[in-house]
Length: 453
Image (cartoon, rainbow, N blue to C red):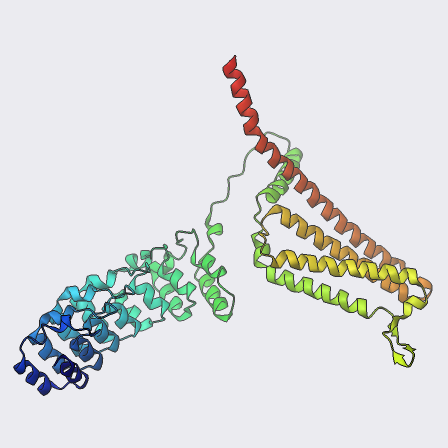
């Protein structure tokens, strides 16, 4: 008989339902003992059989708060389908507490109605229980954050009327993300424009989340595409800044030293502080570009190695073709050996840079930054040396214009000076680190000597 009532709920057959109730008045009370995943009211709510549901609720109002296998009430299903009359009937039977029931995903009927933009149902649920709109889901977001995530603009507008402007600007999820953060994370540019048209939200646009990031900082961490570029332009036009730009600048310290000495010391101090404190975060962001540049250099070196200046000579041996020999080997083997050596250094050092970049090593670590910098300088020096040797091989009698030679030599010298400066800074930094590590041991020994005395 229980099977027949489920069959009646599928078609909304009220006559069949009444006939079953006349045969057994307790049939609805025994539904909890059956093995079905849903009650007949769940099925009627999904199918939109309003009159059928009314009869069921008249006989057994407790069905309004019955749960299915996914902990959904009939109100969940009716709200998701946008059945306004069904929702109103279920709210009358189940009371305002029915609006706050959560399914296994932590969603209330209002969440489902808002996500599907059933605006009349949203208004009915809010009117029945306005506190349901301020419930926070198990994922830590409010219903407003969910509307932003799913790009439900109309539902967002309806629900935002429950808060005043000052409250809207300060609403956050468990991560401290405002509605502006949520719009940026999901790159909802239309909603972003709408939120920034509200004065209080725009005035609070530089609010930071629990990680200390503004909406613009969050956008910088997202993959770059056309949507992110559009969102960045919208934020910057509205005056949204990065968290680092919001920090007050340190007050300039006054010194009694002479101006020339003060300027000289300030320049050295700033240079040293920049080396010690700079986190090199920019190179982490440009890792992909550096990999491409190193691949291009390695590819050029590979091509130059198998296609040397002057080309190759293809010869036959015993009637078979052999690989071509470089023309330069027939002229001056020493110059060709130097060309191959410089070109090989360029290719291997470029590949070494690629290995460092793709290995996932933290580039903000000063050791790997130093290694990467030395490898880059060495690669550029080898490229210039290969270029000079190629010119010498192609020029008559090995003559190369003096200006070209001097320009290349100055460039190589500049690379060496830069590498030397960074090496000196790195060595000094290492020495200071080691001395700081030994200081606690020295202090402990000193304290022990004092105690003995």
